[in-house]
Image (cartoon, rainbow, N blue to C red; front, side):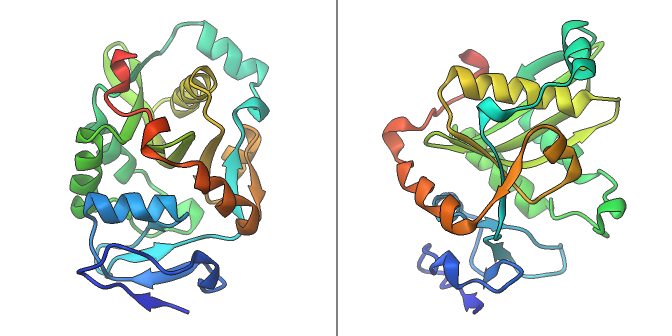
Length: 229
């Protein structure tokens, strides 16, 4: 069933009632309270610029447990070569905008869901210390990275990009290391891709994923700018 969200109430219906493709609701807004509620419910926004806001809860869900990360020899060599520099939370908006211009036609996507409305919404989450970016630089130039939302012991990955070989993977390695060092339990990758599967991510049933989110609370969320950690 697809629900029409109430603009005056930032809550969501039970994600288990979503359509077979994962669509659960339409409408609402992208204000911080609603976005935080969405992630706590295992729901995320994904829509084209010409559409109203669409909200999804996929089944199965692609996730990575940090200890299951697969670190190939070739990727390890790239990381250890110091060819790239990785920074955290130093250029969130540009990282997000760069994700928005990636050509995803090979994945069956004709455009981007990273609209100006989305950029402004997640930049506000970043200002609140909830959204974060891992950025890869080559000779001082941003060439890859990823961004997502962090609540409790979870990192909800949103998108990644690269303009040089392995640049996004190097950023992902840094995310995994950060997750391990700060005792994160799960990196949510949302949708299944061969790229993520090659790094150790795997699909799990929504019925297994949703109960984990009960561990989210403000006391165990790592707020702030992570570049200072």
